[in-house]
Image 1: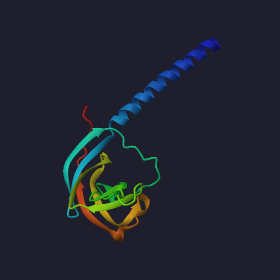
Image 2: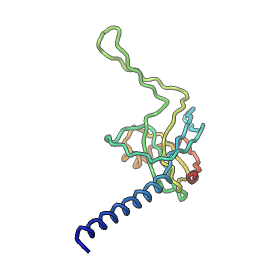
Image 3: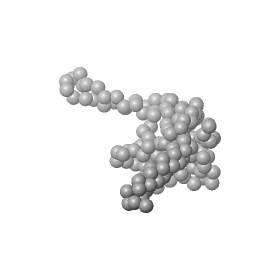
Length: 167
């Protein structure tokens, strides 16, 4: 067999192998889900309003670690954290406006609300059992928030039911 023919067969084999790997990867990614949890917070108690699961993969943020007042902890059936995040407090609204006495300068006002509704995205993993939402004693980044066990208060727990993908 000529070298040219061997080379052609090798290239065809690699193309077929690549197609198989892409197909396997596509099937694996179809199993991934994102849960959109519509939540309501009233008097520092969080409750679930609505839950929606959609196919997809939750992307990891590229930006440096953000600061947050609420700590989100997704736990497995044996209560081991499998995903965490932080977010700003939805009960605090920050308004910036031009100072009428000093044109060109901004004034900042923070308003504390009694209740708010908000939506978060969490990975829809099959082993996920519940989402715990804590208020941190002081704003912190995600990596530091896990260490603040003593200075966080549980606001609510949302039981999750992650179903398999519809086929």
